[in-house]
Length: 247
Image (cartoon, rainbow, N blue to C red; front, side, top):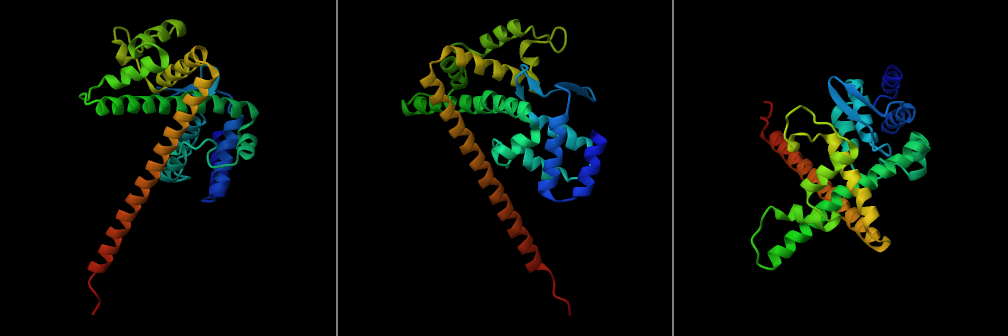
Protein backbone atom coordinates (compact mmCIF):
# COMPACT_ATOMS: atom_id res chain seq x y z
CA UNK A 1 0.00 0.00 0.00
CA UNK A 2 2.84 2.39 0.79
CA UNK A 3 4.58 1.62 -2.50
CA UNK A 4 1.36 2.19 -4.41
CA UNK A 5 0.76 5.49 -2.62
CA UNK A 6 4.28 6.68 -3.36
CA UNK A 7 3.81 5.84 -7.04
CA UNK A 8 0.48 7.71 -7.07
CA UNK A 9 2.08 10.76 -5.47
CA UNK A 10 4.91 10.73 -8.00
CA UNK A 11 2.38 10.65 -10.84
CA UNK A 12 0.22 13.40 -9.35
CA UNK A 13 3.24 15.65 -8.72
CA UNK A 14 2.22 18.99 -7.27
CA UNK A 15 -1.45 18.65 -8.22
CA UNK A 16 -2.86 19.38 -4.79
CA UNK A 17 -6.33 17.91 -5.27
CA UNK A 18 -4.97 14.63 -6.63
CA UNK A 19 -2.27 13.90 -4.04
CA UNK A 20 -4.69 14.62 -1.21
CA UNK A 21 -7.17 12.23 -2.83
CA UNK A 22 -4.47 9.56 -2.99
CA UNK A 23 -3.62 9.94 0.71
CA UNK A 24 -7.25 9.81 1.83
CA UNK A 25 -8.02 6.83 -0.39
CA UNK A 26 -5.05 4.98 1.14
CA UNK A 27 -6.38 5.86 4.60
CA UNK A 28 -9.73 4.34 3.63
CA UNK A 29 -8.01 1.00 2.92
CA UNK A 30 -5.52 1.07 5.82
CA UNK A 31 -6.22 -1.98 8.01
CA UNK A 32 -4.30 -1.12 11.20
CA UNK A 33 -5.83 0.64 14.21
CA UNK A 34 -2.35 1.16 15.67
CA UNK A 35 1.26 0.25 14.96
CA UNK A 36 4.78 0.76 16.21
CA UNK A 37 6.98 2.65 13.76
CA UNK A 38 10.68 2.99 14.60
CA UNK A 39 9.93 2.54 18.29
CA UNK A 40 7.09 5.08 18.32
CA UNK A 41 3.60 3.86 19.19
CA UNK A 42 0.97 5.28 16.84
CA UNK A 43 -2.66 4.86 17.88
CA UNK A 44 -4.94 5.86 15.03
CA UNK A 45 -8.14 4.63 16.67
CA UNK A 46 -8.71 6.04 20.17
CA UNK A 47 -10.98 4.10 22.50
CA UNK A 48 -12.04 1.90 19.60
CA UNK A 49 -14.17 4.80 18.32
CA UNK A 50 -12.26 8.02 17.53
CA UNK A 51 -10.13 7.95 14.37
CA UNK A 52 -7.16 10.34 14.01
CA UNK A 53 -6.80 10.43 10.23
CA UNK A 54 -4.18 13.21 10.44
CA UNK A 55 -1.80 11.02 12.45
CA UNK A 56 -2.11 8.26 9.86
CA UNK A 57 -1.72 10.75 6.99
CA UNK A 58 1.47 12.09 8.62
CA UNK A 59 2.83 8.55 8.92
CA UNK A 60 2.04 7.81 5.24
CA UNK A 61 3.49 11.05 3.89
CA UNK A 62 6.61 10.75 6.04
CA UNK A 63 7.15 7.25 4.68
CA UNK A 64 6.85 8.57 1.12
CA UNK A 65 9.84 10.83 1.66
CA UNK A 66 10.29 13.92 -0.50
CA UNK A 67 7.63 13.18 -3.11
CA UNK A 68 5.52 15.98 -1.59
CA UNK A 69 7.41 18.68 0.30
CA UNK A 70 6.86 18.41 4.05
CA UNK A 71 5.96 22.11 4.37
CA UNK A 72 3.07 21.61 1.94
CA UNK A 73 1.52 18.54 3.51
CA UNK A 74 2.20 19.71 7.07
CA UNK A 75 0.22 22.90 6.44
CA UNK A 76 -2.68 20.72 5.23
CA UNK A 77 -2.58 18.48 8.30
CA UNK A 78 -2.17 21.33 10.79
CA UNK A 79 -5.45 22.98 9.73
CA UNK A 80 -8.18 21.73 12.14
CA UNK A 81 -11.05 22.16 9.65
CA UNK A 82 -13.62 19.38 9.93
CA UNK A 83 -13.32 17.78 6.48
CA UNK A 84 -9.72 18.55 5.48
CA UNK A 85 -10.80 21.31 3.09
CA UNK A 86 -13.25 19.09 1.20
CA UNK A 87 -17.04 19.12 1.13
CA UNK A 88 -18.54 16.63 3.58
CA UNK A 89 -19.84 14.13 0.95
CA UNK A 90 -16.50 14.13 -0.87
CA UNK A 91 -14.48 13.56 2.32
CA UNK A 92 -16.80 10.72 3.34
CA UNK A 93 -16.45 9.11 -0.09
CA UNK A 94 -12.65 9.31 0.07
CA UNK A 95 -12.12 7.86 3.57
CA UNK A 96 -15.17 5.56 3.65
CA UNK A 97 -18.27 5.68 5.84
CA UNK A 98 -16.80 3.87 8.88
CA UNK A 99 -13.66 6.01 9.10
CA UNK A 100 -15.75 9.12 8.40
CA UNK A 101 -17.94 8.40 11.43
CA UNK A 102 -14.89 7.65 13.56
CA UNK A 103 -13.33 10.90 12.38
CA UNK A 104 -16.38 12.79 13.66
CA UNK A 105 -15.93 11.07 17.02
CA UNK A 106 -12.31 12.25 17.11
CA UNK A 107 -13.17 15.79 16.03
CA UNK A 108 -15.88 16.35 18.63
CA UNK A 109 -14.50 14.06 21.32
CA UNK A 110 -10.87 15.22 21.24
CA UNK A 111 -10.25 18.29 19.04
CA UNK A 112 -13.31 20.25 20.17
CA UNK A 113 -13.01 18.94 23.75
CA UNK A 114 -9.47 20.27 24.02
CA UNK A 115 -10.63 23.66 22.71
CA UNK A 116 -13.48 23.63 25.25
CA UNK A 117 -11.03 23.11 28.13
CA UNK A 118 -8.99 26.11 26.93
CA UNK A 119 -12.15 28.23 26.58
CA UNK A 120 -13.32 27.45 30.13
CA UNK A 121 -9.82 28.07 31.49
CA UNK A 122 -9.82 31.50 29.83
CA UNK A 123 -13.26 32.32 31.25
CA UNK A 124 -12.06 31.50 34.75
CA UNK A 125 -8.92 33.60 34.28
CA UNK A 126 -10.95 36.58 33.03
CA UNK A 127 -13.30 36.33 36.01
CA UNK A 128 -10.35 36.28 38.42
CA UNK A 129 -8.80 39.32 36.74
CA UNK A 130 -12.14 41.13 36.65
CA UNK A 131 -12.58 40.52 40.38
CA UNK A 132 -9.13 41.96 41.08
CA UNK A 133 -7.68 38.62 42.14
CA UNK A 134 -4.06 37.76 41.29
CA UNK A 135 -3.31 35.43 38.39
CA UNK A 136 -2.39 31.87 39.31
CA UNK A 137 -2.01 28.47 37.70
CA UNK A 138 -5.27 27.28 39.29
CA UNK A 139 -7.45 28.23 36.31
CA UNK A 140 -6.72 24.99 34.47
CA UNK A 141 -7.56 22.86 37.52
CA UNK A 142 -10.76 24.83 38.06
CA UNK A 143 -11.63 24.28 34.39
CA UNK A 144 -11.42 20.50 34.91
CA UNK A 145 -13.54 20.72 38.04
CA UNK A 146 -16.13 22.85 36.19
CA UNK A 147 -16.39 20.49 33.24
CA UNK A 148 -15.83 17.09 34.83
CA UNK A 149 -16.39 17.58 38.57
CA UNK A 150 -12.87 16.71 39.69
CA UNK A 151 -9.21 17.73 39.43
CA UNK A 152 -7.14 16.63 36.47
CA UNK A 153 -4.90 14.47 38.67
CA UNK A 154 -7.86 12.67 40.23
CA UNK A 155 -9.48 12.19 36.82
CA UNK A 156 -6.22 10.78 35.46
CA UNK A 157 -6.04 8.21 38.24
CA UNK A 158 -9.63 7.06 37.57
CA UNK A 159 -8.90 6.95 33.84
CA UNK A 160 -5.86 4.72 34.44
CA UNK A 161 -7.90 2.32 36.57
CA UNK A 162 -10.81 2.13 34.15
CA UNK A 163 -8.62 1.62 31.08
CA UNK A 164 -6.00 -0.54 32.83
CA UNK A 165 -3.29 1.71 31.42
CA UNK A 166 0.23 0.50 32.06
CA UNK A 167 3.14 2.72 33.02
CA UNK A 168 5.44 3.62 30.16
CA UNK A 169 8.39 2.58 32.31
CA UNK A 170 8.50 0.85 35.68
CA UNK A 171 8.87 3.29 38.55
CA UNK A 172 8.00 6.41 36.56
CA UNK A 173 5.91 9.08 38.24
CA UNK A 174 2.37 9.45 36.89
CA UNK A 175 3.09 12.75 35.15
CA UNK A 176 5.80 11.02 33.12
CA UNK A 177 3.35 8.42 31.81
CA UNK A 178 1.73 10.84 29.36
CA UNK A 179 2.19 10.47 25.63
CA UNK A 180 0.28 11.99 22.73
CA UNK A 181 -1.80 8.81 22.41
CA UNK A 182 -2.55 8.62 26.13
CA UNK A 183 -3.48 12.32 26.23
CA UNK A 184 -5.91 11.81 23.34
CA UNK A 185 -7.38 8.74 25.03
CA UNK A 186 -7.70 10.70 28.29
CA UNK A 187 -9.43 13.60 26.52
CA UNK A 188 -11.86 11.24 24.79
CA UNK A 189 -12.58 9.52 28.11
CA UNK A 190 -13.33 12.92 29.66
CA UNK A 191 -15.60 13.79 26.74
CA UNK A 192 -17.66 10.64 27.31
CA UNK A 193 -17.72 11.35 31.05
CA UNK A 194 -19.12 14.83 30.36
CA UNK A 195 -21.74 13.37 28.00
CA UNK A 196 -22.92 11.07 30.80
CA UNK A 197 -22.98 13.79 33.45
CA UNK A 198 -24.54 16.70 31.52
CA UNK A 199 -28.04 17.42 30.26
CA UNK A 200 -28.61 17.94 26.50
CA UNK A 201 -28.83 21.73 26.78
CA UNK A 202 -25.49 21.93 28.63
CA UNK A 203 -23.87 19.57 26.13
CA UNK A 204 -25.05 21.70 23.20
CA UNK A 205 -23.84 24.90 24.89
CA UNK A 206 -20.41 23.44 25.67
CA UNK A 207 -20.07 22.10 22.12
CA UNK A 208 -20.79 25.55 20.67
CA UNK A 209 -18.25 27.06 23.07
CA UNK A 210 -15.58 24.55 22.03
CA UNK A 211 -16.29 25.07 18.31
CA UNK A 212 -16.15 28.85 18.71
CA UNK A 213 -12.81 28.66 20.52
CA UNK A 214 -11.41 26.30 17.90
CA UNK A 215 -12.41 28.69 15.11
CA UNK A 216 -10.84 31.65 16.93
CA UNK A 217 -7.62 29.66 17.31
CA UNK A 218 -7.74 28.79 13.62
CA UNK A 219 -8.31 32.42 12.57
CA UNK A 220 -5.46 33.58 14.80
CA UNK A 221 -3.19 31.05 13.12
CA UNK A 222 -4.28 32.28 9.68
CA UNK A 223 -3.51 35.89 10.66
CA UNK A 224 -0.14 34.84 12.06
CA UNK A 225 0.78 33.15 8.77
CA UNK A 226 -0.25 36.23 6.79
CA UNK A 227 1.92 38.44 8.99
CA UNK A 228 4.88 36.10 8.56
CA UNK A 229 4.36 36.07 4.79
CA UNK A 230 4.15 39.88 4.74
CA UNK A 231 7.37 40.15 6.78
CA UNK A 232 9.11 37.72 4.42
CA UNK A 233 7.92 39.70 1.39
CA UNK A 234 9.27 42.94 2.88
CA UNK A 235 12.62 41.29 3.57
CA UNK A 236 12.81 40.04 -0.04
CA UNK A 237 11.90 43.48 -1.42
CA UNK A 238 14.53 45.09 0.80
CA UNK A 239 17.17 42.70 -0.53
CA UNK A 240 16.24 43.55 -4.13
CA UNK A 241 16.53 47.30 -3.47
CA UNK A 242 19.99 46.82 -1.99
CA UNK A 243 21.33 44.90 -4.99
CA UNK A 244 24.02 46.89 -6.81
CA UNK A 245 23.16 47.90 -10.38
CA UNK A 246 25.25 46.54 -13.20
CA UNK A 247 27.52 49.08 -14.91
